[in-house]
Structure formats: structure tokens, C-alpha cells
Amino acid sequence: MVRSMTGFARAESTAANRKCVVEIRTVNNRFLEFNVRMPAKDLEIEKRVKKSFAEKVTRGYVEISITVSDGEGVKRKLALDEDLAGQFIKAAKTLKDKYGIGGEPDLASLLSLKDIFRYEEDETNLEERWELIRGALAPAVEALVAMRSAEGSALEKDLLEKLSDIEASAANIIESRRGQEKEIVKKFRERLEELTAGIEADPQRIMQEAGVMAERSDISEEIIRLQCHITQLRELLAKGGAMGRKVEFIVQEMNREANTIGSKSTLFDISREVVEIKSNLEKLREQAANVE
Image (cartoon, rainbow, N blue to C red; front, side, top):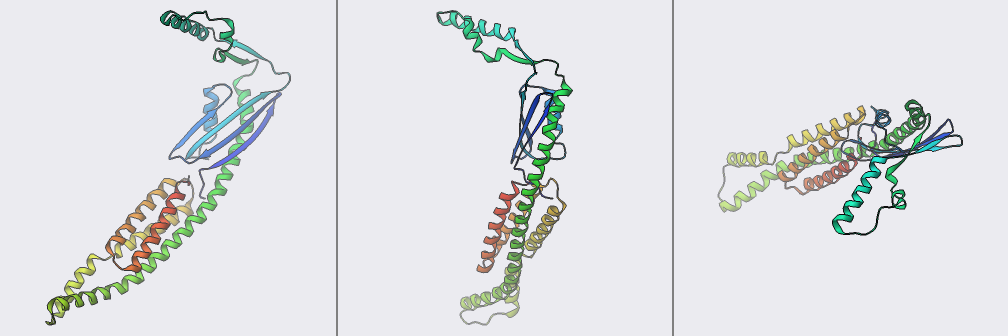
């Protein structure tokens, strides 16, 4: 199944008079990147949060917001970071002495510095905090994956439609190419007769020269490779899983073949189909940027 990289999910959990709300947003990104916002920095909890996404989300920018609110009966105490407060006072005195600024650091100034204070929860250990967070995180992750999968189904349908359009254009090019070989011989004969002013030319030489021109404009190998890439992309979409970067690479190779076909052929019908192919490839490229 194809999965999109964009999605949103929200879930809540409650335990011991505490409520946890988890919101997850994901957007396109070349790699997997996390931004976890929590009430207090806890490396162990953050590690477990990221591990919850293992094998479920493999690509994209993941923004996780975790908020915890306390109900009645939950006690918290205010803690002072004395070392940080001391650094603020020392820095203020340095500024005063260096630049001749008047005044002294007072209590009101220190109380306005929120960074020197923090809340510490009583009798709340790591496992209790994790159980509360996991209660909201697990359903949020599942909802996110479901949303990314649903959007991925729409992406897959659109990608397959564009591939069918490209395949139809390739078939039209093959048909036009068959008529082009006869046109090459005809134009070469007309041009040769014009240059020789009615002098009869060697038919064998005409066929040889026309053969050289036909070989230079031969696009059969490019068409075969283009069709192979279409088959590869269909198989990749059918297989499912993380495929975004592979899709982008195949589309890039298809665009290379289209450019070569366009440069080799001067027939209007073929040039028109090449324009259609490149237009659909650009749409494929834009959609591939959304695929996980």
C-alpha cells in the first residue's frame, strides 16, 4: 500500500487525576525527522516516543506535541535553579561595571526570569509518566498511519492514471515512428533529386544514406526503456511500503528517456506526444514528493 507523508492525529488519555493530550502532524521531508515538544525535557521518554513510530512511519517530518494537565489532588512543587540565577546576577553586575549602568538586580527582576524556576512533580516516576503518555500516543500513531494510508490510496490512483497516460503516449509514438521511416526515405530521395538536378541517382546509395538517417533518429531503445520503467513503477506501487525515493528515481530516468526521444525525432506527432509524456512526468514527480 502506498502511504502519504502528510497526516494529523490527536488522542487523549487520563490516569491518576492527570490528563495527557498528544497531537501529531507529519509533512513531506526527504528523511525521517522528529520534533518532540513536551512539558519537561525527558530524554528517556522522548526516546520511547520515537520508538513508537518504528516501522510505522519511515519518512517525513514528524512534529509531536505532548501536554499534560493535572487534576485535583496532584501536588507539584516549585524548584529554583540557584546556579542559573547566580549566573544572571553575575552577568547583570558585569554589564553594570563595563558600561557604567546604574541600579542593582532586584527580586522583581529575578522573579521575571522564568528559566530559573521549574515545577517538580511529587511521587511521579518514569513508568507512571510513560504509561500516561503512551495511553494517548499509541492511538494517535495508529490514527496517523490510517490517515496517511487513506491519502496514499488516492496518491496511488493518481500515479497509476498518469502512468497509463504515459503508456498511451508511448504507443502513439511507436505508431508514428513506423510511418516516419518511410517519410525519411521519401524526403531523402526528394532532396537528392533536387541537388542532382534530374540526374538519376543510385537507388542502393539512396537506401544506404536513408538507413544512416533512420539509425540516427531511431528511438526504439528509448521506448523500450520507457516501457520497462513504467512496468517497474507499477510493480513498486503494487508492492507497497516505503518507496518514495525509488519512485522519484524512476521518474527521473523516465524523463531522461523522454528528453532523448524528443531530441532524436523531428516528426510533429512524436514531439507532441513527448510534450504530453513530460507533462505527466512532472505531475508524477510532484506526487512522488508526497509518497513515504
